[in-house]
Length: 298
Image (cartoon, rainbow, N blue to C red):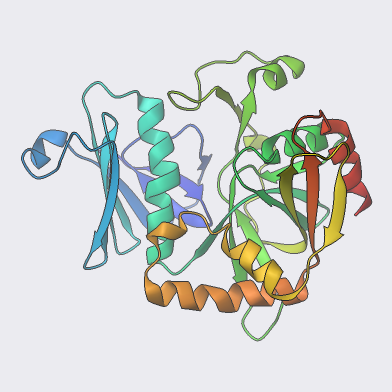
């Protein structure tokens, strides 16, 4: 089967499966990671097909199973083999590959993925983090309406230059996940949901996608607080910053003990050298515009 060439998470990817979400790579060169397609029948009797979601690791091979979607085998950070279920939606197969399977491959390669969106300002970027429901995508959307360039929607990979405290981030792939009213506000059709059971829709931005690593200028961590009527901001310091950053490691449950320890060095460097702020927003008040305006003043 012919391989299609893509770029994702700073890696050159060759895939037997088409990924319209990914940035097409035109240059030649040996891929960093290959994606293979195989029949689920090859695993008959070897996996528990009734498990809703499961993962395990053995001898540098990581396994992820998503019921009725696919079984993913990730080996040595250089191969992802997909065994899709016959009736699975192709969009579901792709999204779990781009999230869970890639996260496992990145951890195998000792690359740090963070659950963060990012906005670009000239040659620098600002990371936007927060737990699910904190408003990351909504803030990105409103900043985009203000003319900011979206660098990444959901995940970035971070690294520190050898011999330097400067930390940079690389984007994952050029797709935002937007709510229906946001798509309508941009005059776009919804299309198919990002995945089953999630009321968000894909917005692709291939033409303005930036594949280069960019210096991180600041970090914003969003928090939802009951009882507030307006947004507040405070600067984070020391170990508190490290803990909050650690909580945003993408799929940190995939880390082994050694990787847990080594990740603290990079996160400590980020906390010590990059301004980090926490923005708290009300749980029961609409503050979308206020939040975007506050971000621009930090």
